[in-house]
Length: 301
Image (cartoon, rainbow, N blue to C red; front, top):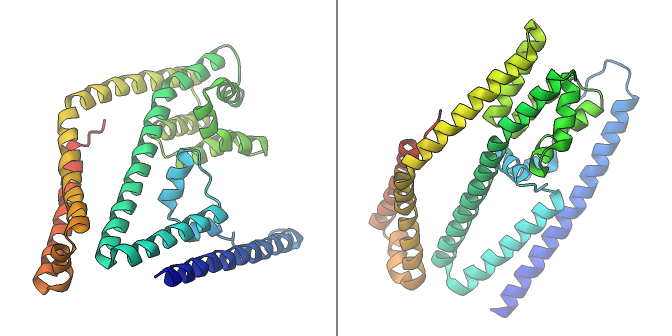
């Protein structure tokens, strides 16, 4: 047993080393491709190389990590995957296949749930700061500042989490990009309703004209009314949401306890044909119930 675990650990470390070597080779190839693109004649188009992190992690996960202030690098992703593979291998050898599968499924589901929860809270915090931020921009526009200048000064005086959210837009504007395009791209990156509404209002004002201060004032008033209505809705549906969390997590908790305490009973659901049918039915029922409860308790305005 110890020899097998040692061999698996060496295999995991070897795979991490090989992956790091491939990462370095890919970076060198990308740098050569960029140099070749810079030396190409004007007007020639080349496909933009895809980031290596995007090949391992889905885009929605990278977006949620960015919201939490985590910049996923290739080395960190590879080391994390190697550590998880080593832990899963040890659990497979010590606890058995069924218990290891149950532990891995529960761990992955819990990690994804925690990631969604933390990213959702960060979005809620950013949404709560947006009306005051836009009102600050409106005040600076009223006293005679241009919109890009008012935005820059507002970001500099904003809270750190809000300044980090708009840091890419500030870099794009510093590199010569237009203000409208920078805000539009930030709205796509942050994926927040308030920012998308601000980008739409700015683009419409730049195209058709009108009083920008009046437009921002209406935007701030609407967002504050929307926030108050959302708070009232969440207060009225707090009990329903708590019941949905309990009903959704209780089957997973019971299944995890059964797998760890009575492996013979849990093995029947994998070995016997009737058990496999019941297992598939339980998983599908759990997913359908979770989707239905989310549709019931979710409130949007």
